[in-house]
Amino acid sequence: MKKRYNPYSYPKWLKSIRAVCAQFMVPISVFQGIRTLIFPTGFDVLLFALIIFLAVAIHLQII
Image 1 (cartoon, rainbow, N blue to C red):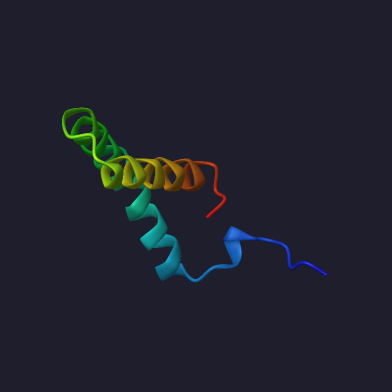
Image 2: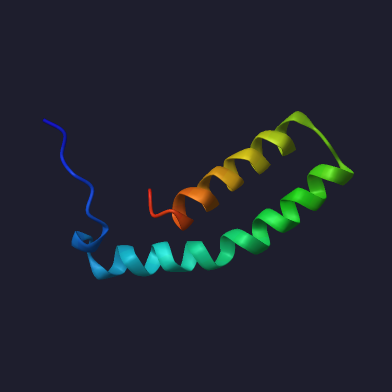
């Protein structure tokens, strides 16, 4: 049986780390998006996709 996900049962320090990450995801993703447009390497595209995935997951409270 799968254990249900409950973000309110996490310790306070983990909630604060998640909040700090949520604040920094937008500026980092904008910077990486501009960098990807200027220097489109495979690593930059993969890193940008990972950052966007993490930003959406934090915003939708999946993580």
